[in-house]
Amino acid sequence: MSMSELEQTPREAADNLEADVFARGCTSRETLQTVTGRWGVLALAALAEGNYRFSALRRRVDGVSERMLSQTLQALERDGLVVRDVLEAIPPKVEYSLTPLGAEIAGRLVGLIELVESRMPEVWAAQQKYAERRTDQN
Image (cartoon, rainbow, N blue to C red; front, side, top):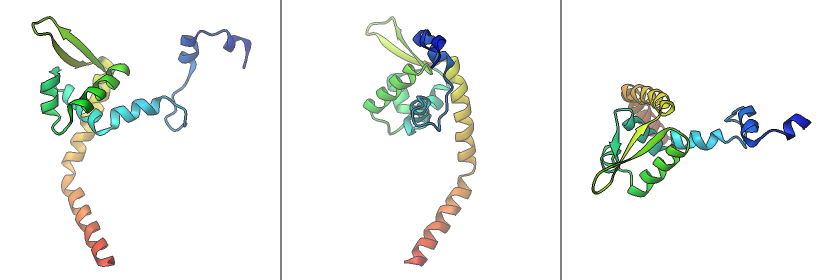
């Protein structure tokens, strides 16, 4: 390690790192896991439709528990993808929205979701063929 590298502030050192999701120690893996996990994908895609209060987002992302949605939103907020705004009201209300980075990532996820949904007849046919082959082997 050079002397100039030792003299860097933690922020400067972080700025010089390159993300490599294939490297075991790369922190981008954690963010990728949050974004691509079942609830992360769905929360980001829902927020791409507009801002949501927690209870409305939970209804939109059907099947997610309150605890899992809360953990997912906290992780997305930590990674700079979601903003949590406390609205002045009695009782206080909280609204979630995407940051510019979150909107960019959500846009790509929505494209992937649309592709998967449009190709489901092919997926169902492949699943049926697979099940038939498995049955024939037994």
